[in-house]
Amino acid sequence: MAVSVVGLFIHNLIGYRVVAFMLLVTVSILAMFLDIVPVLTAAILSALIWDLFFIPPRFTLTVGTAEDRLLLLMYFIIAMINAVLTNKIRQIEKEAKAKDEKEKSVKFYTTLFNSLSHELRTPITTIIGSVDNLQTNSERLSEKDKADLLSEISVASFRLNQQVENLLNMSRLEAGVLSLKKDWCDINDLIYKTLQRLESNLQKYKLAVHVPENLPLFKLDFGLMEQVIYNLIINVTQHTPQDTLITIQADCIKDRLVMMIADNGYGFPEKEIDKAFDKFYRIKGSLPGGTGLGLSIVKGLVEAHSGSIKLENLPVRGSKFTIEILTEKSYVKPS
Image (cartoon, rainbow, N blue to C red; front, side):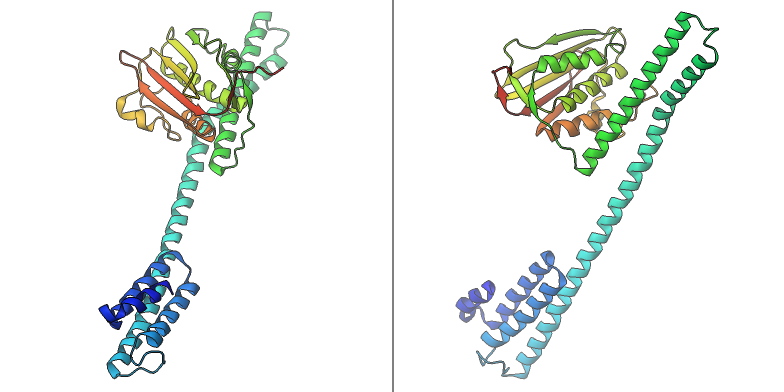
């Protein structure tokens, strides 16, 4: 209707045949965004409008000349074919997209299964073997042997729990159903609680934590941010030698929480930095173990907080992860 009104004002300048092209283009544009029924309706209405308001004699359905009658017929046929073909193209694109998404989904779960099969089987085998040894050889084992077996069970259980946690978080992120439970969060408490969980992993590493005393509280999901820090530090321990210095910093810069986790290890290959946060991506030459989900989960959890994460190599050696989150802050400590 809008195009028809415009055509009424300018048809004396451009001629009624050009108005037909304007209406045909309009039908083509509608076909790109609407379903077949409204597009066919628009095609029929445009033909009737062109006949009634533009083809001489105007304001009647009568068509004056044989040439105009042929033009009207051709316009109607072209408009209908255009509507049907455009809709068909859209359907094919939708089917191709659905097929592509299905293939990606199958590939995702196949890769996930292959990656996790080893990571889940190893700790489970360790737990079963250690428990069986304790049950069948309890009397012949020394206290030190029993303590070693219990330690193996503890480490394996922790590893198993971590893999399940990563899997659950990735599933929530993929499904888009991850809900944040934000509350006032003390960053010092967040960092040191995470480090406490990693105590056994960090025994052979050096640590430096720099958090200002006057740092405000930030509104975050404590559990998810704990997982972020955990995954980043685990990533450092998996790709750096013993005695590496791991530095953790936090500050409030321009109303943003800025956290940095750096190391003086080998750094990341420059060509692989852009792929570091991809699902299942592991640096070439990495030691066995791991699923390649850790950093992709970190990215997803940070972005769920409407934040961003960046990875870069340090000038001399080592690498640095920088997290920035714009969120509410408060200098009032909760009672």
